[in-house]
Each structure stands twice: as structure tokens, then as C-alpha cells.
Length: 524
Image (cartoon, rainbow, N blue to C red; front, side):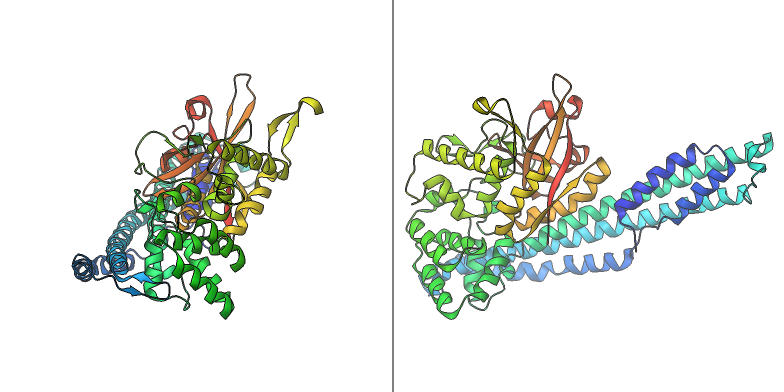
């Protein structure tokens, strides 16, 4: 089995220490041979480069298509209704123009990612080859292994040879490690960018014959008002799950769903109906939900059904507050785990979000009562996850939740609405965090929140933890929700270092002992 790029860099990092500290000939031989046994960076740079150039070469034709569609969209189309769900033809053409622009961006970004990967891989393979030559030369200098008694004593000449071989081998293994690190970083970045482009091929995610191409295109393009394209209502995962759900409906239930969609007042209302179907609700539950949101304007829908909408651009410093009315989506006391889980579920389950913001009938718009319902849900999940208490029964204080409880409520509360299972994965250092980053970025690109935990030492020297959720990804930035009611953008470099202070505060910086130590990643 081929080693992963991250495995290679970790093994070689350990071998650097073994070679530089080898105190005997046989120890040095063993370390050199182990280093040579680590596989070289794999892949054919020329083939990857050719594929990248083929992608970027498609953009000229895609540009022409995009220009023609955009020209049609600007001509003032008549109010013609098309598709099974009565979509305005002008909206479909606008969505098609947007889709064409995304296609151009995907070709360009995908092609550039592959060309960059090709260049980095070629450089890494050259560096790896040079390092292996040095290691083999060092091994030849040492000759045969010492016997049992020979290894007891080393004369001056033997020591000189060993030290020269060790010096050469140290340079060689450094080259292997640097090559592995460069190949690993290039592969991770290419994986991140290609996964993001795949997730943004949005209309194609909804694989169902029960809706026309026009319907699927319009649904995939629908966003909340006043926000960037990062706030599309249906995620890639929603589109895929909604398509599968439509296929499984009986003929009668398909008709009921189409009637709901045709009757919807706005594209946003249609999108939220499909999001409810994607979240796993049956047709009767979707109809009940539809009755509560029918006729509401897009601003009302966004406020009630989406707890986190992005206004800050990736890389923008600072924190963005998320409120219902004047009340933050935040925690009360040491409930960071259930609080972050409540918000994560509300992100993927609009029926649940409405129960929190609007009450059982969806009509209770009082922010104070929203906050009461939010606190009740946080407490319910705290109990569900077997959260700890301290003090006597008449004066109990919440004391936090362990990793088993966090995994349990993630699987009970979020998993059923995304279709995946959460597994706990410890991160013992930068290599572990770097290794899991592609999985995290793929999940959030598809619209699946990823819970994480950070820890630090308090003023008494005791370890304390805090739970957050990664909810977005763009370029080299991660959008992190903190159950203090805010989101912030954290760089990949800070994530790998374990420094989440940009999303929390300076107490969780590396300077204050902060460390990112656990991730709850979804597995198919």
C-alpha cells in the first residue's frame, strides 16, 4: 500500500533524528535503510501538467458560452414560466449565466491547481532523488554491518568514517523530508481546490428526473438576499440528498412536493422546502413546514431559517456576530459542546431552525422567547450527551461534556440530517492536523459542519477545553463558528499550528498554551 504524503513526512522527520544521533555503525545503517525504504513522491508530473493545461484551455470556449448566456440575460426577457415548479425563464437564464461563470472559474482554478501540483511534484521528485543518492553513498561508505563483538569498540578510523557517513546521510534525509513536505503541501492544496470546485458544480449534484434541468439550475443558484454566493441556501450535500429523496417519493408524494414548489412565493421559499426534504423529513412534515413559511419574504426566511449568514470575506479580520433579533446564537454557562451542536443542526435542518426562532407554530417572533428555546435545547443536548455536573443536587453546576458525549450528540443531532456518521479523531500535533485538513475542507465544502475542540491551561494550571464548529472554507481560510455567537476566518497555517485565537481570544493562542486537539469528522 502506498504511503500517504503526510505519513512520509512524519516518518522522515523521525528518521532525521535517528540519523543525526546514531551512535554506532549498525544504528546508522538501520536508519539509512529505513529512510531509503520510505517511498518517493509518486505521480507523473507531465501527465498532471497536460491535464491542467487541457482544463485551462477550455476557458476560451467557456467564456464564449458565458458571454452569450449573459447577453440573453440582459435583454429583458418576458415573464415566461418554465419547468415543473414554475420558474421564471429570466431567473433560469440568470442562473445559467452564473453557472457558466462558475464553470469558467472551475476550469481555471482546477487547471491552475493541477499545473501547480505538477511543478511542485517535479521539484520534489528531483530533490528526493538527490537525497537518495546521498543516502546510498553514505551506506556504501559504511560497508558491512559490525558483528556482535565488533560493535563493542570503534577505533578512531571507524569513528571518522561513521561521522562522515552520518553527516552525508543527514543531508540526504533532510532532502527526502523536504521533498515529502513539498509534495504533501502541494497535494493538500490541489485536493482542497479540486474538492471545492467539485462541490460548486451545484446543479449537477441534484440527480433526479423528477425536476427539469431548469428547476435544478434555479434551485442550485438560490441565495439569501444581501449576501455573497457563499450563502447559497442549498449546499452540495443538500442538493444530492434532495435529488435522492425526490427519486424515492411515490408518484402521489412527488405530485404533492411539486405542488408545494409551484405554490411557493419566492425562489428562497422553494429552496428551503427542498432543504427540508434533504434534511430527511417526509412529505407530510415538509408540507407542515411549508405552511409555516409560505408567503414569507426572503429576509424573514433568512432570519428564521439560517443562523449563520456570511457577510465577511475570507481573510477579513475580526469576528462577525450572528443574532436572531437582538439575541446572539450563543451559549449559556459551560455548554459549548451542546451549544455548538444546536447551531450546527440548525444550519443543516431548517425545520429545527424554525422551531427555535418561531416556536411550534413558526409565528412566535419574540427574541426573548427564542433565547428561552435556545437555552432549553442546549440543556436537552447537555443531558443527552451525559454532561457532567459539580456541586450538590440542590445547587448543581454544569461542568462540561466529554468526547464520548460530544460524538453521541453529533451523531444523534447532526448526522441524521446530513447522512453521515461522526467519528472522534485526536490530533496530537501539526502533522495530525495537516493530515486531517483535506477531509475537513471537503466536508465543509459540501455543507457538512465539522465540530472541533481546543484546549488551554487556566490560571490554576488546569486544562480546560472549548468546542467550536468549522462551517465554511474558501481558499486557504476556514470559517469557524464559536458558540459565543460569532464566526471568524482562521488561516490553514494557524489551524495546523493549533492556534484558534482568531475565532476565540488570546487565551487560546499558542503563546498562552492553546492547542487544537480533537476533530469530529464525518465518515460516509
